[in-house]
Image (cartoon, rainbow, N blue to C red; front, top):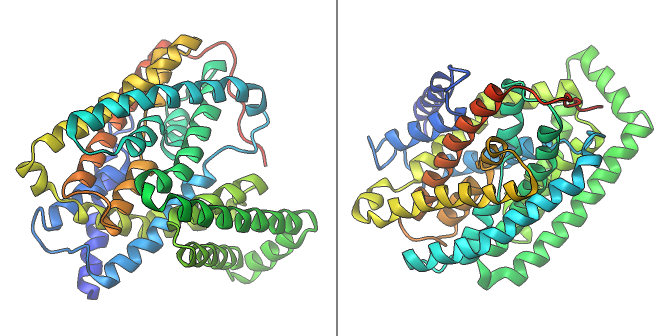
Length: 385
């Protein structure tokens, strides 16, 4: 890949912020980046090719960082979540239970056989998308507080379950690799917590800020890529490495300086490269040749919405149930794994993304309705640390 193509990819990534300019109706930034990749990929102009080795390598780095940022958005340090955790866990479990029969019907109707994969997709949610929407729309009150652990649990559990669901034939190997990766992640968390308690992290932070060394960013990138190397060695997706390390950093308390640096690296460069690559890898021509795949995407989006509405039986307001429908990380990871490992038929990754876009549309509209309904009685406490 030439520097000219890399410049083109960076310019294409600007489509995300441009489409997201409207705070009320603008889609998430990733939507514009995906569309730019589709427009420049084989389904469009044919300028970008997802099988280019350099492009794929940069996309893998972006995949790890995007999942790291998603994990770091899970509010594991918010003390108010402890009181809301039981109800949030109950709702996540109800949604997961409801997802199984819906997934079975969709898999049988379209003849794909991916019951487990669809169940994971239908039950998933996206903390990286829901939390910014909650903040942007200034949604407050106990119902919103109860929503957060539901979304966080669904996000984390589905990310871990996805590799097992998408390739059942390698479920045992994937489970073993995931267990090794989880142990390594817990070990990193213990080291990070020790560094925080002993004051080592603060000392490094002060030195880095004084000398402009960006040491925190360098160290965390080295740890992330090291964990990614463990994932590759155990034949586990690097998404688990990124998401797990993000959770570990969130549990210790992500320093603001590091958060700003990671935002600059991920959202400003490597994240758009990944989403443009993903858009270029989607075979929209297959959707045209197999219109049933369009129906599959619609069924997944609508099915996810209906599945999450099951939480209404526990008293959750309908707009918040719709907001919990939002999906980004899990469908994107499924499409990426399905493309890289050839686990999905031509056009199926595009159908998964279509389903995700429908859930994003539902979640955006639901957030507007929730905001119009007004805040609830009690405000949502902000995260600590």
